Length: 387
View (tube, rainbow, N blue to C red):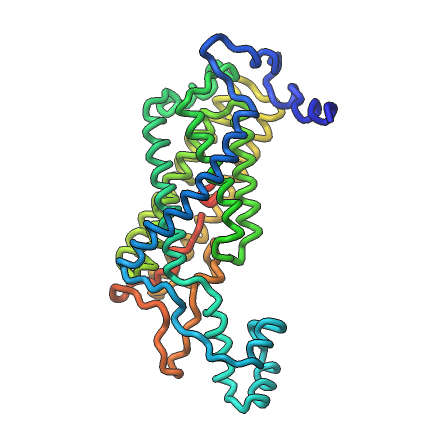
């Protein structure tokens, strides 16, 4: 075990040349350097955030949803049928034409009626708009609060105005209480997302988002242990700047305020482009790759850190391509094609009956000739938010 620990914490990998862990172990009185053990505080804090979320959704978000007349139950329930229920639970939730024909003959129903039953039954298992609204309101509240705190904190920091201060004196940079609280709170939140992903709305990209959250936790932890927290705080703030706008757009979508949803999506798209395709590469990547090279010089963990940040930039480009594709289709067609969303919520879109069946679609937007509000489900979280 000791050999494994020594291999993992190899100074030649983690630290610049001629720097050892012993140099950082005994700072002057009143000076604190980052230590891996500091991050353990994020685990109980993550449980606390998860508990606060449950209370917030139950008492605050739920009340807001009711005031906006967002229904809590499913729109239409399938009529009880033992034969179809057995097929639904044990064979398939989406029967093909062969199954439909067989069930139609067995029950003496029209094929369309069997299709409608399965459609209603699938919708019955999906979380209500009320539930989705509460989840988004929690994320909106947290993202807005953490962005506000981070921006106010960084406003007073010299490295916000001159990124070379991220590297002056590195790695002998003091970990201030404000920077520590910012880091640990962000880390705890992403830990809480990993916990809550098993109880949240089930999405088709469950595994992808789980890996994303794990990668975010790893990147935050890596930059803290390596005392790259100054530039790490800039990365987190840049990513937080657009996340709350996305959640705001989703809230207005669930509340059926279509025009406001359209406007917020445009604002989100612009903010995403500016922060992740302009500020991030020109301001942050330039600092981590070139300014740090000139001031500190490269070393093994420096290469890994920059590689991860470059991977993040590639993801930004992919995500923005998806966002732009949605926006263009929305403008050209007046609606959004859901199959290009970066966050595909298998439970987010209730399947509407066809017009021939005489039923209205479950979602009716407030606003005329607006683009379909489902594009607000686009999630950029590494999302989020992701760093």
